[in-house]
Image 1 (spheres, one colour):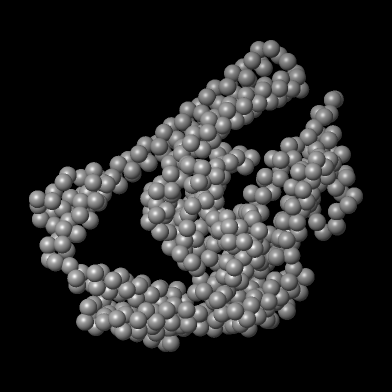
Image 2: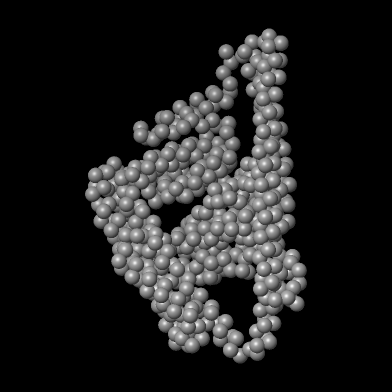
Length: 509
């Protein structure tokens, strides 16, 4: 019996790997006839998914090894190294990542309290506490190192101390960062006359601060509610500042000017949602008209979304039906021809390869069309659009956040609206939103800030009905992946960015 050439290559390559692999590392066989670019891309996807599961934190040594082999594979491909060498590095990358997953699962069970305490501390902004935070990070890393070194007993013994340390830092971060900012804003606004200009909002803010402070002191183990109350107090303090700004601006205005200002604001919204001009009617009626127009637009969006979902279901049903018909016809032909099973299998394999080749060519043609279409949506200074294997990447050049914050400013809405249109060009694909920073500040703060900014964009897309939440993933890389040197203002600005990665497998349908 003739052995397929691809199988010979696979066996040969597996033998090569088996001779140079550590006994405890299982390297899956890879055929050297595989496309090295595609295999590198698959490893990149695997490691990116691992980050969303915090595997790089729970098993840093093995994850770093996997990432190192990915870099070797990229370097080899760029420098025209042998296909065998490139694929060997990819295989080692997957093998090391599999080890990282094993140890991450152990860590999730053995030091779950420390992991949870660290997550809550990071969410509270504990990374800003400098050396005290860094000291605990070293202790946490020691726990994961013990697990990776199979010293589970020592990791479990020291977990409680690390968990308590992060819990204490969380409380301190909330009181010093969040509530500290609330107190500063309160003092500033009181000094600027809040007791006279905004007494109701001032009282609401003071009540929110008192409520949060007392709750944190008395219920220190109610972590989620503690953070919610602190955030609510900060929101009220920031709101007080806006009310004060508005109140001060209205002090110098005539009553008619105030009325015209409100009228103009309502009319701007009315025109945007396609409502009637009702400036000759009461303010309440104008507001009701706006609300009804918005509700109508939401209903339209939901209708279109439901239609797209139904079309997808219908298409998949038809596709299944056609595949069943083809399989039935093949079986009938095989029976009529009376050919041997081996010959029939060979013909089917040839036909399948031809079908796959045709489908791939059609998918590539379609992808190229959509790529050109999406490129045309953005001005050159707005975004860079490029292909990354089967994915399409939109690198947002002009999106800007306030320093140290994850707030999406209104100036970015037009750009994000274009990104929404680009995503919808591909139907309902999976989308990854990557956040990146420059290297200003600590690594921990940058990692958390980039994650928060990516999550803010994700929440924006969810709120605007672009995709369901499970279709959108946010990943923060901090300053790990710079595009330019961080030693210049221009370079740092380039590195502060959001990348939107559209998974385009649906174009194959």
